[in-house]
Amino acid sequence: MTVSINNSMGSALTHAQYGMHQASQKVTEAASQIARQNNEPSAQGLVTHLMALQTNTIYHEAAAKVVSVTDDTVGQLIDTRA
Image 1: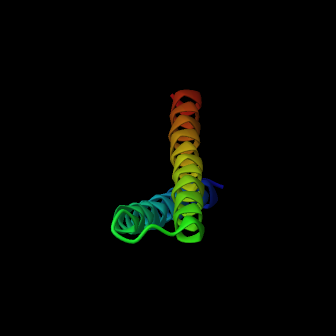
Image 2: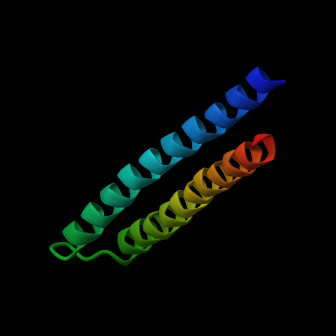
């Protein structure tokens, strides 16, 4: 059972960290595209990039929550075993 829990926690943490990394890259990309819009304004392009910025910010927050819950769960398991 211990190995299964360790693998599950590690897997959740790995996926969450990957999700945070991906979302951060996409936020950076969207912000860069928005900054470029100042030179060539396009309502459609601006809306698309603002939506990408907001969506990936939410994805990042969700992945960060998974990291937090995983940390709390591991802490509770340690407290239970102690």
